Image 1: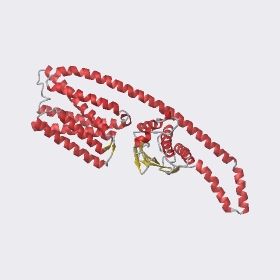
Image 2: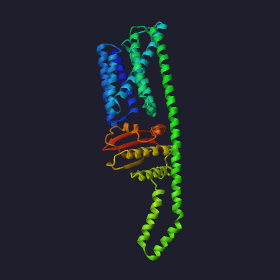
Image 3: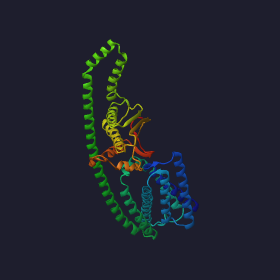
Image 4: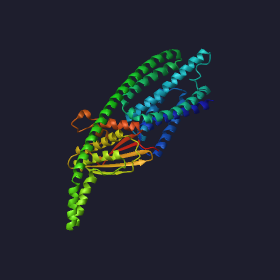
Length: 441
């Protein structure tokens, strides 16, 4: 039966490590290929199981704070190596996950101790090496596997919001750690009744903390929605002004169509075919350049792109654009306008912020991959910009109070469509990659 317990203990430790890695996989972007990540996860999980077995067999202890700290650091380093994340974020996530699992484990065992004590049973069966603790660990392992799949999906859906609250999460993590050590010591002294009374204090404190944290998140969300609403109104006003300007220019051009036709007729009569041909190309080219450029086969998106491309060209910024057929795009007009207008505004601003020695340009690629829309937009930046996060935190706009609305709007759209954004700097160019669910599969 001792072998059964140690086997269950190793599997439980491996599943806890797997759960922590699943949370990291849901929140952070992969640094390696999917195959390499699976191999890395398998190696670290196997190593955790071996270390747990060695520690349990040699020390004959079912709880070990030192072992918990070792596991936290091991999974932290593994997550940092497998995913694009900061070391402190990986450490915070693992502190929360491992201490959270330990606290839940203690609470369940305390409840079991009190029930056994009430009915006259043996109260220490869950803290003694043997078949009963092995069965308990087996049940916990199955529940952790189920919880892992549920939490991974939830974390993947909420990773945009989670990324905004790392400071608050760190404070929560360092609050959980001393609580876990305190409860563990009282439990091992066989004083669960005393510990159960302390749990009510812990629950009240945790409830108050979660209430304050939830209120803070709600307030931030309402502020964000207000900013996005103001931005959408601003973008719509800009788009409307652009449409009016374009129609006015087109009306002026079409108003003189009779004069253009008469000029062409005279040219043909005089036999100046080359001059006539150049005149037609110039005339139709002006109309095509301003109004009939079809990039995506989506009317609203083409309107936004033409408006922003024209704005870029007026500022001597070269445009290169490639796109698949996006006519089935399921984003609404406000989302299309906010997403693409803000991305191109950021690219235009980055170009204007560059020195004269740097050639200005914007490269944009839109691809349809199944139900996923992939947007790649690249622009030159100053050489002192090495961190993509710095690009999003700086602005050269005169109105500093409106800075940040664009990224909030983009993040909101990505959240609503289970998408995410990646930034990378290579050879003086900032490349933004966006993935989001934008088509019906």
